[in-house]
Length: 274
Image (cartoon, rainbow, N blue to C red):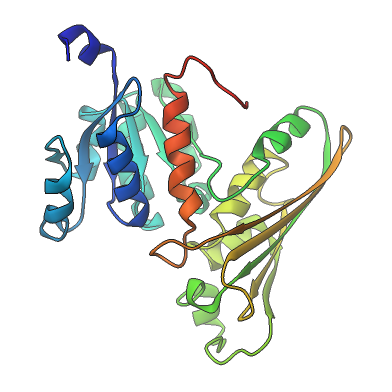
């Protein structure tokens, strides 16, 4: 690799090497045009030594608040509680931050202003949801309503604050149970690891307070099932998707693939989709 080529490549750092982060790191290591993996941040480096040694190029392990020093794009693949610690230093340095814990962004929305003031960017990938392009387009006009119904297997919902606080027993369910109905903002508080899709949908459309969502615990499904209904002045459309859970039952396999697709777009000659 020539020095000129290396200097023109976008450097990507990853915060978190769980089921999503490892897939993104592997894709970057195997090669994405115009991008290079430059650093990672992990809570327990020893736990990830085998994976890091399997990569073709050795990676430096850095504290999460320093990733912006080593990268043009910082990808957040960590628990939502770490969102601010990852994104704030990156956007202060004028870097781009790819945010997966979108629900956590609602409580830290000043980060958007911070990014604007420093020339940074916050990018929310499509993730587990199809149709965000259509919602983005419809929002240029007028959207009247957005409704979403999410059904998840029991394992994907265990430990959610809403379930714990309300002492709801979902372990012995034999039929679907509606756990929640309300705004995307409230859903994000009660199900921070489960409804990032709803928050992304709300940010693409009419906002987290007007976007309505139902959350169901459903022992009859093995996939994360989302159904969306959008009524706008330009179109009325519905979308349905059934995502296969990853090693982490709270997250679909397609989430990591969505980030990889987003990264490929950064330097792609041909870009399809808005």
